Image (tube, rainbow, N blue to C red):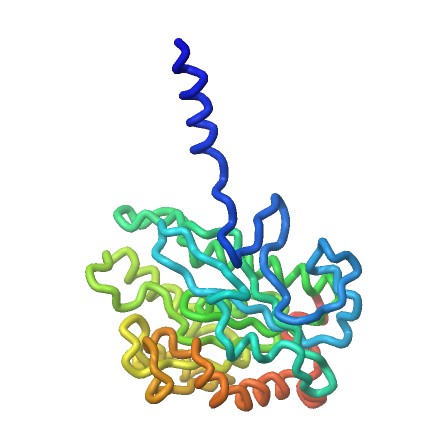
Length: 289
């Protein structure tokens, strides 16, 4: 009988949530997880959305990539999951506005999609809904939709594109690096292929939200030809790059200082066009939402 208390203690320890890893923001119930990648004035330091001067900002929300459906995603905004090309935009100015980069850690780190039955909500759609909710909260904090730009890499890029396409008030634009979902991984069941086709068709038919999309030659998950349908959309600039002298895996082509140096001017130009006086009219749905 003496072993019973020890067994109960062991069960309690196993059930307790794992501590955040170094570099990861600690999770708090109901809290927004993520980090501003640069100084941003807040009314309440404990609330990352209590912006003190939202009228001075162009807010860029970055969304990290995902691991496999039932592997817990990692989110380390300042340590590995944010490309230098995005982190380097924080604090820069375009059209009289300061760029504020928020690296978002979506709460859904595991998915629910049963690839055998084709039932359950995949991690990508859970994350898409959470990105959309964050956009609504930022708008409530005083940032107009036209001064909100979504960005992401791999599944984070696909989720950003999908959240923008589904938004009642479309964001100012999307930047996506190697956007990917249920790509060419070997042995993937047909349930994933069918879901990808459905979501790709939705993105292809979506209203024109301006987008700057990068595809990388040799990407084993999302080669440029598989993303060509995005380049055919009105308002989308599809850039195909080779990692070349920058090195690294093609799917992670945006994660080098070399890529940052080569593309930062283009990224800044894209952001400037989103907030230039000629583009500051109400975005889709903004006047009525």
